Amino acid sequence: MTFRTGTCSAHQMSISRGAVDCVTDLRLRVHKHPSKMNKMNEYETRRLEKIKQNQKLLADLDIITPVLAKQPRNPDGTAPAKKRKIVQGRTTPSRTSARIAAVPVKPSYNDEEASKPIRLPRSAPRKAKKSEDADLGSIIKDEPLVPSKDIDEIKARWTDWEAEASPPSRDEFQVFHFEDYPDFTPNKSPEEMLREGCFGGSYYRPLRSRKLTLVVEDDWKELPKDWISGLNKETFLISPTYDADVNKFKVACGQSIEEWEAAGWISHEHDIRGWFQWYTRFFRGRRCDDDARQVSRWKKCVGETGRWRRMLLKKYMSLGVREVFDDGGDEDAVEVSPVMHQTCHHWGFEVRQEHLDAFWANGGR
Image (cartoon, rainbow, N blue to C red; front, top):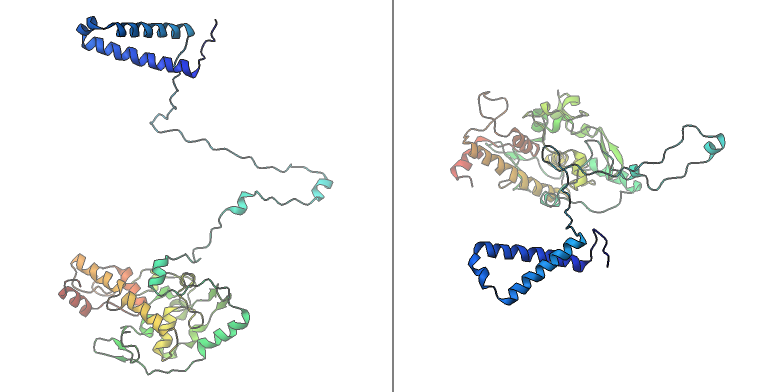
């Protein structure tokens, strides 16, 4: 009988492993307890002889247990980088005959470039979180674009209205009060917001609406003349770029109108630019179906329990500051989150000393 060196069956491999294990176990026993070797019974003697026979058989077969080579590593001990499969695209010859050149190029349906994402400009709207949309009164719906025949009617609604409510009153704390919405209490008028600096001076810039597929511009002209008298409109109203230095607190905050539109916060049939445009018209006496939603959004942001208002007050308390920070005040004063201050300012509200005093008095509640 002849055997091929280096090959074996599954049964032979099993014999190899079993033999090695048994011999190792026996040697350990003999090493630890030499006196017990003399007491081995006949069965153990036969078993040992069988093991020796198996070892001799394995030696005759020249069977070697294979050892897998370890994967080489870099000098620093890290695993080598995986090799990537490089797919060589088809190349076009540098010279072709006139007959071949005249044949139209067949379209490629395996072109990877066509499936790559396109990088949009920074002003492109980002998809807002669903929870945030719902919290701020999002009205986003899966609706088709507005038919062109309805756009003229929508545009007419923006200016074709008459004041229905009387102007708001203002108390000794400079808080505004509206008779029909007593829980809507901003302390900044639209005129004050514009003159102090808001939205980076770009709120009334030409705006392209993806929903209405049109460009809106010059609607700043509907603002009362006394609101913008002496105001540099190129800087404070229609700047094509957002300028943080224009803002009262000299910081950028918030999202663009395009992002508001994508998030569903814009009611196009009422105010295509969003909340502040609604506020300018509401302040002047217009009333519409969107009022309750916009007031609700204001309350959730800067109302009595609004998140931005409370976050800012908690920031003051965590820093141990008892005096309200005001840009333009004492240069040595502690600056407490200018971004939160500017955000509140965009909602027609600013935290004042009486708010901070009350917050400290109530233990941050």
